[in-house]
Image 1 (tube, rainbow, N blue to C red):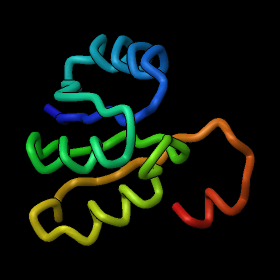
Image 2 (image 1 turned 90 degrees about the vertical axis):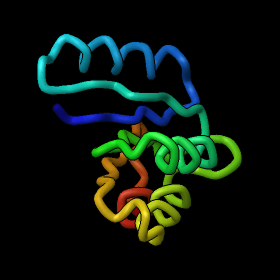
Image 3 (image 1 turned 30 degrees about the vertical axis):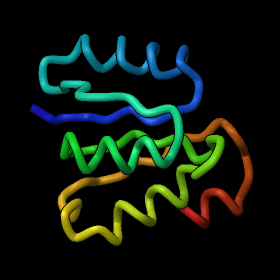
Length: 95
């Protein structure tokens, strides 16, 4: 079972992704976060296998949250997959 945390500032996007993932037997959505800081906190509390992280969110964005997660030894096994609908090279290179 792959444990997944969803991090996106749009509730409907999170709900849509959750719905798709929950139809699969091998995935379990263990939590949601509406901004990068909440995603980091949820990672520490829930220890997911994967975070599906939106790049652009209010406050701490997904890029900064991914940096914090990657630098935290307690989260060494957490993988971050960045999501975006923006076609901006800077975001992709930053990820």
